[in-house]
Every structure is written in structure tokens, then in C-alpha cells.
Image (cartoon, rainbow, N blue to C red; front, side, top):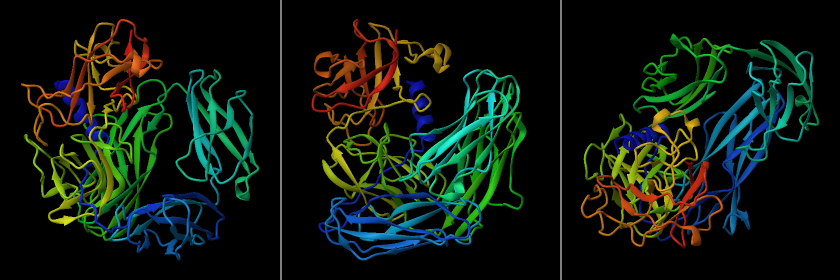
Length: 586
């Protein structure tokens, strides 16, 4: 159990969990909905203004909206248009949020700004629209890629276009290693992601040259030849978890820490320099350093001396990599201090982190936002959990909830076991000042299996000998081994709802009698299993003793079971099933 505690603690910190807070639903209260929350990337010719874009807002509640809009940058001018008839988004009328792109003065490059749409009386307001423009186009003028001397290795440069393009690759050395490919998945609406890809067909160490001729774009500057330099090396190749940081912080907030993980995409051993990080000269609001001898770079932002506005700097990371040093741009927006702000859709369970999902009674939940706590992060140190932590409360349906942890952008808390089932609202209160409201749905149970942050898709499951049922490729050595038929597994979960006997919200689960789920769900192993036929009856389902809101399922692996390195497992409550997680079974 100590190992599990360690995993939960690391996962909570790494994934930046947040807490929820809720107020009662007003009798006549509007609820803001936006058709989109992203514009772009929009390609704009240098020296020209971009086209005005429009995003529809609608009221999913009662009453009427009274919207205002503001921008974080001077080159965006948002206005609220006149209401008109609308048949989408669940509303009878739409209010257009018009976004003018005054980009004529911007030089070549990519720029991002934030439009905030507000209504002080609406649930799920304010909301933000991220606007990105690409001045001079998105297709790079040239690109340099690094590959190890390993056949089949690939490296890419990604860019986004606003129309379908074609690319003709040519190489002057090394054979057929270059291609243009559609990337197939984009986080932006109405944009097309492409990659220039290099694949090592078995090249020796050295430098190789090629080009991709881009044609067919409706944006003329994107139709050009892109020179490509490929470096094949036996040295390490540094890869960064984040290539750019865009941060937002209130001017009186405590310093905030951000981390970049440096991994090796090449050969040999990646070694960071003794003093591997430097920041732009004259920048006093940011410091950077290697974190405790690891390959994580810690970047600390202190807004204490800054007025509201936008600031930029660069962090340079030095190493023995063939593609070093690496420069990471940091864009900082400092905002005036104010009330806590809960992000729209920012209330999620602590297992899947899926937005707009139901939250089960008693589950561990998280809320994302800003200015939730202005001092250093704080964590509960004893049980039962209290409903106030360093002056911060989470209100679910206007009732305080037990709080685990609070920081500037996150609060972890428990949905009370007696929270009302159905739609309700959540808010955060900081030293008596309440945030905006955000809507959530609460269910008696909403089963969610926990998964490892470091091994995506694999459940937090423990073999009976204390190891994890992960494949050998997980790299945990003797700490991991595939499960076997007849083994008893402990599977960890959230959101399974009230127990017998009942347990008070915020209290650690009892050891005697155990708090059990009745009736218990079935456990289904395998991708081809049928829940109603192949469910395995568990030995125990209930709250983990001495923990708050954490459930465990003790189940034996059946004799007839699918085997492999990624066997799905889920819970079957009949009318409800959980998410699926994987485990290795031999």
C-alpha cells in the first residue's frame, strides 16, 4: 500500500490535479455555451489584417445572457454582435462573438492571444477563445531533423495549413528518406496538420540533404520549396516534453513552478551540463535550473515585480546532445489579482480527467482554474479531511466539500457522499471571495478505474506479491511481472458510490467492518468478453481502509482468460460500466 500511496502522490503532482467548488443552481440563471473555443492557426500575409472570425454563443440555461468580451493582446479586437435566431447549441438564439484580427503590424511568425467572454450572472462563464495566427504562412522556410543510426527511426516537423496541400519530396543524398504526410489529428478547428517526415532506411552517420516542394495551397506564400537537412548521429538526441511555455499568472500570486522533461531520442546517454540552463539576459522574473539531479528542468516564475501585461523570454538548455542547445520560448501573461476563477468544464474526476463527465458520490475530484490560492501550495496532513484548507473552500451545491490539496491552479477534493444527484454547480471560495460557477452532473456512482501516468492505458493494479502486472517493456525490472491465472489482483478505482456501512465524507474508510459496495460489480477481462456472460465475481469491492474516496476491487484472474501484454479490464455494474484499463497477463 505504501508503494500505491507513492504512485498516487506522484500522479497527482504530475498531472496537476485540481479541485471543484459548487454553489446552488439559481432559479433563473443563464448558462454560457460557445460553439468553439479555438480560432486558427489562421494564415495571414505579412503586412495585412486577418479575416474577422465569428463564434456563436448561446444560453443553455434560463434568463438571458449579457455578454462582454476582452482580449489579452492589442492585435485582437472582440465585439459582441446582435442576437439572432439559431438552431444549434441547444438555444433558440445565438449571440455572435466577432473577433477582428488587426495583424498588419506583426512580423513573420506565430502569435497567440486569448479572448475572454464574460457574463457575471452566468454559469460556466467566463470562457476563453484561443486565437492563433501565422504571419507569412505556416510552411517553414527550412527544417533540420535528427535521427539515430537505427534503421526505421523517424523524426518530424509539424505545421498547420488552412487548405489541402501536396508535397513532392526529393533528396540529393541518402536515398529515399523524406516524405510529406497528413498528420491526421488536430487540436484546432478547420485546420489541417501536416508533417515533414524523415525515416532512416539504414543510413550511416552523416549529414544528408533534400527538399519538399509544397503546392496546392490557397495561401500563396505556403507554395514553396522547403530545404531539409537530415543529421544521422550515434550521439544522444534531446527531446523536450514542451517546446514552448505559455503561462498566465496573477501579479500577487506566489511563484509558480513549471517542469520540462528532457529525454533521449537518440543513442548513448543523454547528459545535461553541470549548469544546464540559462535565461534571457535581464529577465528577473524567471529562473531555471536542473531539478535535483534529474533530467527535469524546473522553471520558476515570480510575478511580484511585474505589472499586468505580456512578457517574453527564452530558456536555453545545454547538453551533450547532437541537437543541443535547445531554446524554449516562454510567453507570460500577468493579470490583475482578483477573485478565484474556475475554468469552464474544469471539474473532472481524478481517474480519467474527462471533461463533461458525471462525478460519482464520494469520488476524488479535481477543479482547474486560476487564483484559487495565492500563497504557496498546501496539503491536508490529517484525517478526517477538513472543508477549509489555507482559507480555501470547495462548494458543491453551496455545501463545503472535504479538501485534500490546494494551489494556484488546482484543488483536490471529495464529492460528498450526500451530494444531490443530477445537475448542480461548483465554485471555489478563497478567504471569503467566491469564484464563478461551473456546471457539473453528479451520479450515485460513476465507476472509473485509475491508470498509471507513466504507462498510459495501464491500470493501477497490484499483483498479490506487490508487483505490478505490466509488461517487461515498462522497464520496472522486478517491480513488474504479468499476472497469472489464479492470482488475486487489487484494482484501484474511484466513483463507486456509497457503501455499507456508510462512511462520512472526508473520513478515512474503516478497517472493521469494511465499507463494501452492494451489490458488487462484475470484473470483465479481455477485449472479446461479453459483460453479461464473462463477468468475474470479485472477492471484495469497497473503500480502501484508511483512505478517503479510494476504492479497491480484489479479484482472481480466471483460468480461461485472454493473455498478452495489453489485456483490457473493466467493471460491469449492469446498467453501468467503467472505463477500460490494460494489464499484462501470461
